[in-house]
Amino acid sequence: MEARIAEAAGLDVREVTRRLQPLRRDLVSDGIDDAFAILQEYAPFRLHTFESGSPVWTWRIPEKWQCEEAYVETLDGRRVIDAAVNPLHVASYSAPVDKVVSRAELEEHLFTHPRIDDEPAFIFYYYDRNWAFSCGRDLREALTEDAYRVVVRSRFEKGRMKVAEQRLPGETDEWIVLDAHICHPLQVNDGLIGVMTGLAVMNALARRPKRRFGYIQLVTPENIGATAWLSRNEDMIPRIKGGICTEMTGLPQAPALQLSYRGDTEVDRVFRHVHLQAEPDAWAIPYRGLIGNDERQFNAPGVRIPMLSYARALPWGHPDRPFRQYHSARDDLDLVDWDAFDRSVETILEMLDALEANVFPVNRFKGEPFLSGYDLALDRNKHLLAFRERLRILDCIDGSLSIVDIAERLEADFWTVKAFVDALAEVGLVEIATEPRPAR
Image (cartoon, rainbow, N blue to C red):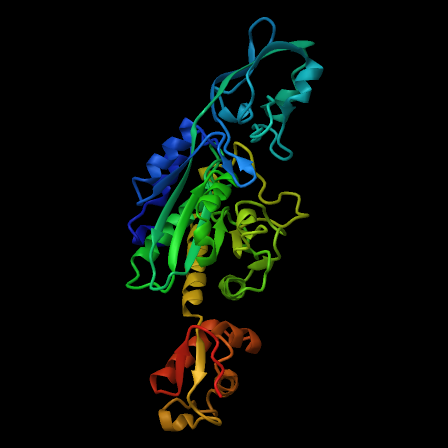
């Protein structure tokens, strides 16, 4: 099924994903540059560039890596592993090598996927000078000769790492960040589908007549890209209210929400409340309990932006976590469930809508108001539970509690509380504040 929200917003996410999936999207490479150029065809992304070797806080931008060919062959010239067949056969950022090695030495540099027997795994050496190959388990077991020739024709050179950013301004100078990484070559659900999620959400937000908050979408080389962007935008940090990292949003698995480092911020509580009510099997987990991507940089000491993560990932302890084909050549378009993708986009949009709507109702009444006099009373004989819920909501309206505060306290639906507050405001019984304002 096609992605409904994205299509309604004029974006064919399948087309974009099909174009991006085959690219060799390493941290600093021609492949990732091509990916950013494609993204700019679909959204007004601005590219930040960072020179190789330049410092970004305690890190340094890596060099550009290009690999012309990589293979393992028998001594009589028969290639048994070849990156021309599948680029994941060679580890990203492998150092150049051309030598004959014993089978024992080859074994030290040869990896297989823990669950996928017939395809290579995604292996990388971003910050270590090393070389490695990956192959299926059966192929590895078939390598029985005493020696092999290994060849990696790669080069490291000065380059420019890129981070893509697009912004939608809001009525205030508070910002929400939507983040995803794009740097896993050939893979779709680990990273790329999160970029598509952010793109669909931003397209939908762009069509809103007004927005309380501004929105920033970041597309990064994982971790180093987020660090680089933050280091260049330190003046923005106090103005970023929070955000969400997205990946694995199109898998047919239960949706999970990983909270921020603090876990108790307004953003955490609003997002968690909406998320747990969005799908019957939705679940939430504390910081670092699910995955570890760019959210680490936003939550880190000296930054402490409450950045949550949304993914349809299996939990720690599950034999296939976060999904069976993770970090393998099998992580492709065939795995994407576009219905699940749509539900993910819908949930994230509802989270953002709730955050925008999370205001503080301030009472302009004393005592319990006479709802019948304002045509807001319900027939308790027909709607007893809703009648009682309205009275309980009224108990909480004193300017000190937000909508989510009230919803959590009463174990009520956020939008039910919001609708009643709106009705009270319309007849002048409450006024709306964006900060706590306890009434006297």
